[in-house]
Length: 180
Image (cartoon, rainbow, N blue to C red):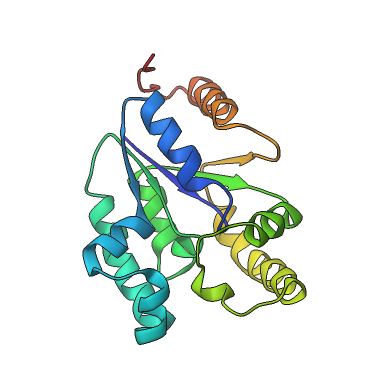
């Protein structure tokens, strides 16, 4: 079984994914971390040296490699589902879950994060707001193709776990075992 988390940057995919993987006794792969490990470079530096087009090509390779794993929760990058036919790949190789947040929540999280985001470099708060709203509008069509969509506004990872468990049960899916 593969569970693939999609959503905008800073929506909690990695944080929630790690905790779900622990609770469900599954492996966890963060596409961004796997990219940096494979190519021995931060994504920010990669963007500076090679640009977004080359990043998206190599990110797809990392996605394909991640989809070869079983019994895993995969956290994608915010743009991963939106390029090539990645959303189709994700949906045909696992159970996709869109972790949805209100744009203002995303903006607030991005304003207070220490993680460098190459697409946000040098944006002031007004420009960041415009960027998030514009990109979210462009990407929403891809995100909406997820099998399950969870509004995670003010939800803790444990609450997302129970949402997922309930969704599996309601859809006749076998839910991985819980780790105490």
